[in-house]
Image (tube, rainbow, N blue to C red):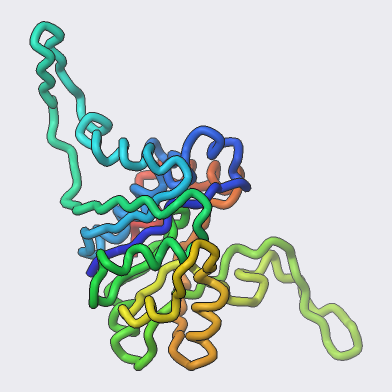
Length: 257
């Protein structure tokens, strides 16, 4: 199965970093976050990637084109312009890089992957979030229902403390930042059947998370796979710093499943 990764947004809420690079290239633990996303899939046995480029996409192209250069020591003979790599660190990945437009919305970008995915089901995710999701269990769940798409749902860290009260208003106990503040959200890890492309019309303004997913839900073809393990999305500089600290640990939490 191929893994389609959305990597074309402007990342305006992380402008401290994204002014000079696309959001998926923001480094955590000395590696771009998109590398961590791909490594998570690779650890689950999935190594074919289709990356949907937009804003500063050429930097993502450059990273993969010069992957050996970025990840190994080199010896350069200036006399004859020969380069020798002093190592062989790499990945068993096949990476397809597609320019999908600077201002295209998520649905429009996904639509442009149709001819590369062909008539096969595929994984779909964003290039700015990591999780210790067991993709094989997610795939088993997807195969068990008759829908067209499985959306992983998560409960992010709560933002505020809460409390429990009885019908009279008497406070019984405090709850320190309950996970998800009691609700489930879209975790950004999907499995799609190829028929999903039929729900995405042509045009640069189609937002996948609105009309296509809304119509699939209305028709009963969208199912949720609950993930209770680690999940974190890099939306702000604070998120970036938290992920960077975690990525420097011996046991990176999104690689443990």
